[in-house]
Length: 506
Image (tube, rainbow, N blue to C red; front, side):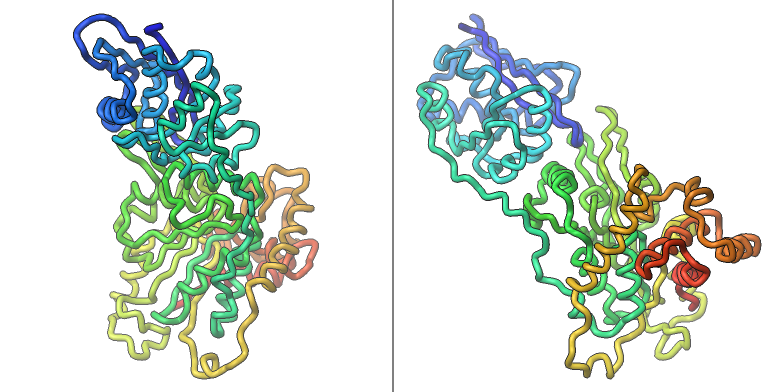
């Protein structure tokens, strides 16, 4: 037959669409036409597929070849269609039986010698294929561990086109080594025991991990801000399997598995450089829309060091994701929504020279420079930060101590216990963390004690806090109550939450 078709998957963000790859070989002048809104990388598949077929001792049809990717209205990008086009073309050339490729999804990029290279987005592609009723998928061997996370589909890992053809023609194939899905809860490389002193910052980190609250750490260089931020994932509870799959899917789209295992249950931490751009922070792209740092930190921590040094508008681009928990990117090819439920940790020096301590000791900056430096963090962004904690310089006494501080494992146990209280309280609600309590619920079902509310209303009347600030303080007070074992936030809990929000008075 001169007409054949097989299947692959096109991705728009995390959403996959099963694509039918049709190949028609007809009489006429030798040519190759690719239809279906391909991008530049996909248009170049012609030369890759042809070289792979010829170098595998197969016959390239010296006729008019038409390849159609349907649905035609859906933009297709990337090189993951190479293998599907190659197999459909050989089937149309009557070297493969059409029954052998029915109901099979093919994913993989071809090298010129016929090897099958890894591609991005294998897990979300397989999820889409499973929803479409596909039972078998051929993937590159390099993506096999990630592909195994998708249950319900027979995964066949191949390294070379010759292996695929041998399997399709006579059913012979090498059985790939089964990877044990060894979910890794914590790697143990970082520990809070490494942090010397800093009891207030350690407490703030525990509160942030318990309730999912955003935090600003401000202090001189060398005080331990980065150490504390990098260790917050070690005190977060292990991700559920569903959460881990969401994180793996986002990292698969971005192709960032070099720094994270697909089977890790540890909350991710993403630390973009302070010179990063808006697109790198929230995601984007002209053709293939990729997730940014905010989405890569989904279910984990987004840590931005030297926050005041970030270019204008980069941090403010996080204001909407902090409220919504998602990032929607609109481009001419369509709208893509990525999840972005992260814990934001900002770190900053108190002034340009970094030595301002409130008493001006050793600081060479003028008062105007100090105010201008922290003024780079916009008011609307700061209003979304739950806690602002001053990290004091480490003293001689802290450095001379030979006993280590409290370990991450001990802190994590308290975090898990406090989260269990919150989960029981929110058992009939759509949210699970204190930071996610809607404003309406804070004013009705989850009010602190009456005297605590009177205190907050007085602060609101004095314009010391905003309406958003009042809600933020109540949410943090619920976390403090869970840690202390209180059934309802007391005046003491609310006052402590208020101090943590006011934080730095420099």
